[in-house]
Structure formats: C-alpha cells, structure tokens
Length: 365
Image: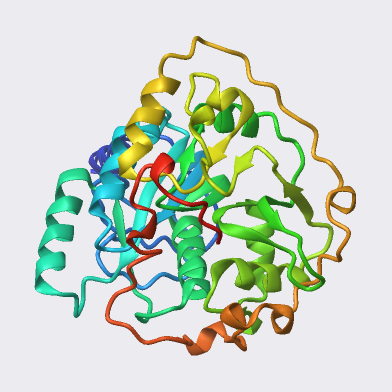
C-alpha cells in the first residue's frame, strides 16, 4: 500500500515536471525579471505580451516572462497614414526588423474606440494582416507626452530590452548600421537623437528620432507620479531628464533631421554617412531604398560620443517658457492625462510634404 502511494506521488511529480518543461519550450527564449506574481496575457507574437487591443498599460507589469531583445522601435503613426506604414514595411523595416530576432518594430496609433467607422475598419484589417500595430489608450488630441509615456510603458511591460527608439512615421532608418552599433555601445544612460540647440532653455532631442537606454527609462518611471507632460513628446522627455543624474546627451550628427534638400543623398552610400533621414515619404522612400540596396557589404564605423558641451553652448536644463509661442504650453502632471487641443483624430504633419524632394521647399520642424 505504501509502495502504491509512493508510485502515485512519483507519477504526479513526473507529470507536473513534464508539463512545466513543455510550457517552457512553448514560450521560447524568455526570462523572468521580477519576484512579482506572474500575470500571463495572451497574444499571437508573445504569449505573455500585453494585448495589442486596447489594454491599459502599467509599468508595474514587471513580473512576467519577457523576450530579451536589443532594441524596441516604436513608430508613432496617425491612423490615416496607411501609406507611410506600407512604405516602411516594404523598405527599411522589411530589411531588418523581420530578419533580426533581437529587434522589435511596432506601429503605435490611436485607440479604436470612438474612431470613424471607415478608419476603424481599415486599421482592424491592417492589424489582422500584419500584426504590428498597437492601439494607444490615451485621450485624443495634442498629447504626445502621454503617447511617449504609453510607448515606454508598453515596451517595458512586454520586453526586456536595452534600448527604446521612438520614431515618426516619416523617418528612414539605416537599421543594420544602428543595430551593429548598439551591440558595441558600452555607454549607458544614453539620451540619443538630434538635439535642438538654438536658445537657452530649448535644448532637447527631437522626438522624430528619440532613443533612450533602459536604465534611463527605469529612472524616469521611478518618478512616474510626479512627471509632467507637454503636448510634445520631446519637450516632455527633456523635462523628465531634469530628475536623472549623469545622463549622456548624444547629439548624433548622422541624423539628417531636415530631410533631403537635394538628391545627392539618395545614393548607395547613404548609410555609410548617415544613420537616419527625416521627412522621407512614400513618394520617395522606395527610390531611396532601391539605391541603398545597391550598396555592397560594408563595415560601419562607430564614432565616439562627443561631449555635449562641445557641440552646444547652452545648458541642458529645459524650460518650456523659453519656447516660441507656437510651441509654448504650460505642462501638467501626466497622471491627469492632460490634452491641450481636442481633435477627433491627430493626422500628423499634413500633406504639405507629400511630394518628392525635388518639387518642394525645405520643411523646418
């Protein structure tokens, strides 16, 4: 009788271990990052990922299995910019994001709730086809500080990453070069982008290409309840930096922020000189990428980070009151979910730049 009990106990333990091992194989290469209670959430790409359908994101979601990646890229895109998302998928995103397991690329757009029926249908179909869109549950309107915080929350809730890159949907990224460089970057506490340095109190990395290392993001979230948001993501992040010590401001001159003023950049040498180009639209993205694809295999150099005070004579302290009137809005606490301009749907920069570079004037942000 005693032997039968021991045998039953052994079978039970063996079965349990077998189930746990199967569970591990099913989830693949994930790590457990906290002692908090596991709260699994279903999703096609990652069985423990926060749902892409209207889930409220919280940075407290640290206690679950998360895939280890080098880089998360969040491309903020207006619902109506289906053409831009298509162009990105068929150019630089297709070239690298789908081929590199350590890089995650997602589009972030408005919530489907209360959206125009036409665009709700288009976005639902687009998401079903590509499974690469996240719907941000933030108030509609001019509130890119809240959107930036939502993107941070989503990323840190779903992945164990080293870097987070926030992009506009009119950016072309030399992703192979960027990824190779990130593997060698030993410097932490990075705040990386194209920095505006025109006046005291206005210094900030433009949100069109804004990279943060994970340690900086964790420091930001430690002050979450006291964070102030602006209508603009770059101003919001610049304010958040005030609370963090020893941040490295990396003004990357390889970012062609003003876009292509002429066709001289659209060559197979583009990514040898630059790491990203702003103001690239469907009308010229394919031609630029076609030229880049002609490039032979090269070894990219990794430049040293030049001390910021050698590139900008102004202090790093951002003050919203020093902004031009068009961009001067009094910040409010992010937890209040402030909105400065109520609109049904944010459409982006508009169609003024939806023409080839050789037919338009230089567009300044």
